[in-house]
Length: 107
Image (tube, rainbow, N blue to C red; front, top):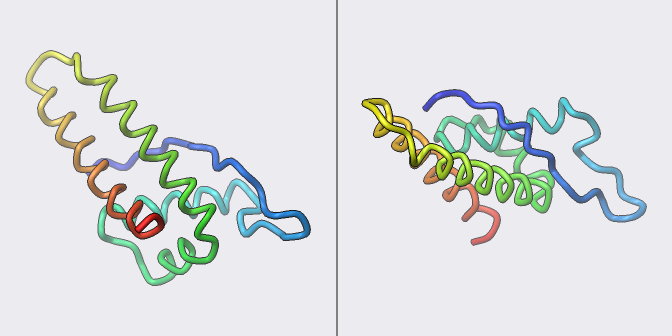
């Protein structure tokens, strides 16, 4: 699967009086990398720990990545030429992996 950078913003902060585990852009990038690694079946134990450290934030990120990936898939449906099938297959594979991660948080 090709590496992608979607830069999806995670919305919603910590509850009042709670410090967010995602205190910086670096943390958000690490969480996004963990989601993609889990979707690709290559997540390390540390990446799974990061995903499980704040399930509501991880779930929101997975939801955003699913929506973003679905929108990108829809945007390439009109492609013509020999690369169309491969591009669509790549997006379909990304969606399937993200759905597996989605199930982790939404059961």
